[in-house]
Amino acid sequence: MAPGDSNPGSPTSVRRRGVRWGRVTDGPVIETERAPAGSTPALAEVARLAIRLGFTAFGGPAAHIAMLRDEVVTRRAWFDDRHFADLIGITNLIPGPNSTEMVMHAGAERAGWRGLLVAGIGFIVPASLITLAFAWAYVRWGMVPEVGSVLNGIKPVIIAIVSQALVGLGRGSLTRSLSRVVALAVVLLGLSGVNEIALLVGGALAGLLVHWVPKAGGRQTGSILNLSLALSPAGWGSVPWRGLAPLLAVAATTEATTWRLLLTFLKIGSVLYGSGYVLIAFLERDLVTRNGWVTESQLLDAVAVGQITPGPVFTTATFLGYLVGGWWGAIAATVGIFLPAFALVALTNPILPRLHRSVTLAAALDGVTAASLGLMAVALSQLAGAAITGGGTAALAIVAAFVLVQTRLTPGLLIAGGALAGLVAGVV
Image (cartoon, rainbow, N blue to C red; front, side, top):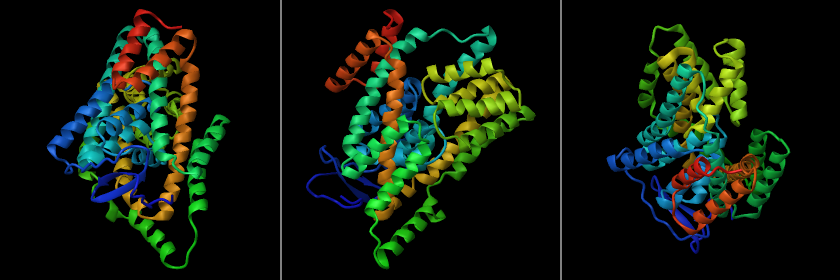
């Protein structure tokens, strides 16, 4: 079915900003009405969800996105799997922390630009505070507390959570042969080491090549017009420029190092694509080689803390900022690395409905979405290789998957159970 077509017999429909979206899925018809932008009940709901994820979302971006899907698609029905997968696709096209940007998108979908701000802050601040506590302990005692056994219990549960989310997203989004072919090709190419940005661009081109049948006049002109409207400032009415401005004030300090930290991490947050390994490369170049602020050993300890704490992996910046500049350094580094994500989501969220109004652009987005799910599968395979290290971890992953399928137990509780299993019994 071409993007934008509807099938009255079987679509899952979601009403968003006055636009009814028809989607072909295997699930029931869901009708949800978008809460008034910035309304108190909607903002409170977004805040509760984001804060809980900030305290409980372990396991890295793929796990965070899986937990977010469980909350906003399965439990709350804010939108359907197809729209969620589209958000993943557009998020993969911009730099920054993908899971954090997905939480911001969910907040914006529910409560407008205020929801975007509340969701982002609610997800980032709890994780940053936990990381800051680790940094304080590190400076005081010179070491990171041992949490290896807890991680060994959490990782297999993460595999089960991400697997379930990937199956659900695939069922809702890969409804056409082209999408399935693109996703499979991306998995194979991704496992062979092809750059993820190249794969996303390839997915978009595949969608265009198959679905764009040039026709004279109207359709081409309409597609170009829709693209120009999507990218024009007129589409940015909900961008919270004044709401973002106060965040810059946290760097208002006379310490030159604090300003340098802010600008350094602002640059990293503005251009960083890829995994945590790419983040390490940026940090090593700017903090160790260029400025000499931290040692290689301190950098690796900071990255380890970012991996073992809940919430965004980018809170590694909080740890490093504290090592370099104390409390103000931690604040400056945290604001710097996350501020671009707020701006990028504010720019791209209003564009998505406009993309779907053009068959051509929607076809490109469908290709990107399929490629994004393929990349998620690649990440899952890599995570599984690191998490399943023996019979105990394999058994824990199987049990977690069974519980997810058979019950409505939240991923957060499952993760807590995995941590307890690793701490008390140990898994090998």
